[in-house]
Amino acid sequence: MTEADAAPARTRDTVVRAAMELFGRQGFRTTTIAQIEAAAGLSPGAGGLYRHFPSKRALLEEGLRRQAEQGRSLAAFLEDPDGLAALGLHDRLQAVARAGLRRLETERDVNRLLVRDLAAFPDLLAQVRERELAAVVGMVAAWLQAQPETPVGDPDWEALASVVVSAISHYWVLRDVYDGVHPHGVDEERFVRALADLAARTWRTAD
Image (cartoon, rainbow, N blue to C red; front, side, top):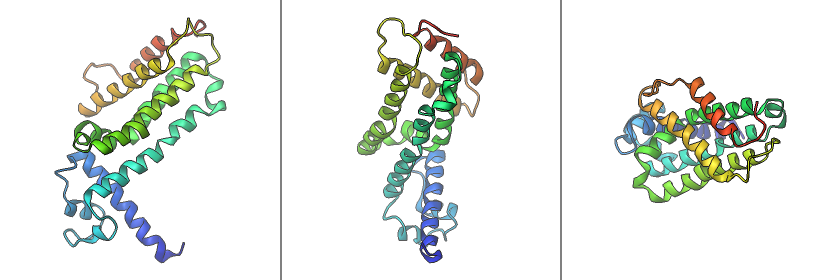
């Protein structure tokens, strides 16, 4: 790719990042094209954004698509045999919980859109459900089932994964709503340890 070809791609990337940050911070409907252009370094109101995207909705779709692509980092973490296998069960569970919280933070703008705006776009809401929510629960369920310890009884791995993912997501959302301080007064380390304590009861041998 030549420098001339790369410049529009860089501008497009900048526009997407600026738009998603604004959508997440102040909402999709209240964010204007001129605001996005200004945040992306384009001339506000000059229509430069339309050389890269036909509409504000197209920008939202591209931002959601890119976020789903970036979410593969969690899959890579769960599939890393060296990064987790050397840890005891309790430490493994805590590591996964922390990774989930970090991923939610990197997806902050999408998470805010999901809670606040995407109900108005049922097709995009369904895409997030399939690309993000269902995919993450599936990954976590597969990881839980693959642990070497002997489980108690016959666990419902998908349900357990849903409980773990839901707890992590709810904790993150409330902390985000309250500007970084969880309203229950439970800090991240206490939350992660408690969640690992509960999940570890699924197996006979827990450290």
